Every structure is written in C-alpha cells, then in structure tokens.
Image 1 (cartoon, helix red, strand yellow):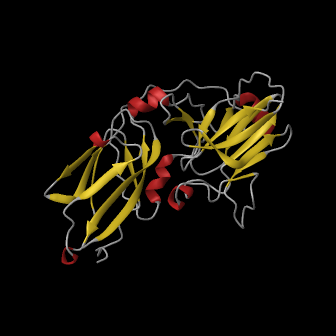
Image 2 (tube, helix red, strand yellow):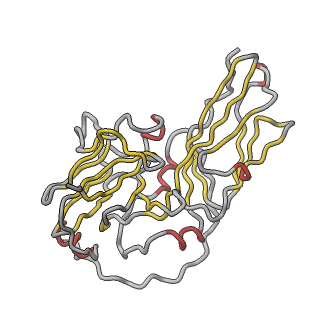
Image 3 (cartoon, rainbow, N blue to C red):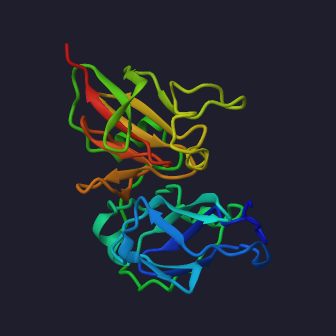
Length: 286
C-alpha cells in the first residue's frame, strides 16, 4: 500500500543556527501508521535529532549554535504494509551570531551580496522566525568605488591582489574534492568565464553545471548565471551574479563564511557553490 498523505510532504525549510525545529510527516491515519521512521542528514549530527518511539512520525531537530550557514538534506524512510517510502527535505541554515562573527569575512560598506533569507519565499517552505539578534557595534565606514565607477575600477578597488603569472584553469569538484569529468576551463586574460546552468533564456555558460548535482532539488539553488571569473590586471576575480552566495570552504570540509560579491581568487582556493558543488582555481602545469 502506498503512503496516503494528507498534504504534500515538506520539501524545503530554512532555520537559524541554535534554534529548535519540529516536523511531523503528514500521513493519513486511515492509511495506517509505520512502526518506525529512520531520519538522517548529510550535515546535521545524529545528536541533533530527537525522536520518540510512541510518535515515530515526529522529529525535533536542535540545530547546533556554532554551525555556519550552509545547505543540506534531512532524509527519511519508513515501511508501510510492506512498501518502502523515502523522501528528503532540503534545508538552509542561517548562521547564528557566533558563527557569523567567527567565519564570515569582513563586509564592505555598501556591498550587496545575495542572502539566504530569500529561501523563505520558496514554495513548500516552512521558515522559522529567527530570534532578535544582539546589537552589533556600528561598522567603520570604508572607501567604496563611486557609483559611476566602471566595472574595472570596482574590481581594482575591491581586491588586494598579488600579481599572477602563468596559466590558470577553473575545475568543478564534488564533495570530497573529486573533479567532475569534463568540467575544466582555462581562464583567459581579458575574457569573462561564465559558470551556471544552461537554459533557453541564458544560453550555455562556459562551465555548464546542469545535470551535475546530486538531485534536481539541489540544482535549483544554482542560478542559470551564478558566477563570472575575470582575469584583470594580473588578478583573477570571482564575481557572484546568482541568487545565492558562494561560501568559503572551512578546514573541516564544511561551507563557511560568505564570499564577497567581488573576490580576489588565489590559486588552490576552493569555493562552495549553492547546491553542494565546488570550484577551485588551479595553475596549469606544463
């Protein structure tokens, strides 16, 4: 017997580090109830899950307070009348105050980077209202490019670059830093390298990520035009143009602080794309 749902199971959710989130699978009582449900996550530890034997459909998650902003999945599976059912809930964690101050790079005054709060407007999403954040000391004003500055002037003023010589290429990686076959492109001085998902409206980018994600749900987080890579005056710069930001890769392999809108990309540095793919800048060796 197939599972009888009273409504569509949750597909996406946004919550904040340090908060508690509860959910119940909407199975109809008339269709029978499974005796147990297995819950798991690729990011959250099992210690974050609270389950009850007498209420197997209910799950409570205590999100660690020091968890940085990231994407992940909560998976579940159960058996009902001999038929197995499984599903996934994609989540986006907004970093708490401690994680932001620890992992996030310094922001420039006036910088506009894509934020993760927009996920709350996605369909089938149940956002949890964040608690009021503690007041922060005012940021010191910094010099920014004038509004009429050209793109070249903005890049030059936004990066403290050391001159690069030689040849470089961008590689797309999966988790574990495994290269995706065929997704490597050279960076050419004076030419913009585009990264995103092919579409009829945006065309085919230089690095086409369509169909390379673990699931179609994760692919939705990557924009059709997500990243532009520019080689400008002996400096290679990453420019975020998509809806969701890139994130720095931490030492423990998890996504960390948000990459600025314009970022001086050093060879060997791995950046996390929305949807759990990664990109790295490598020097081409003869």
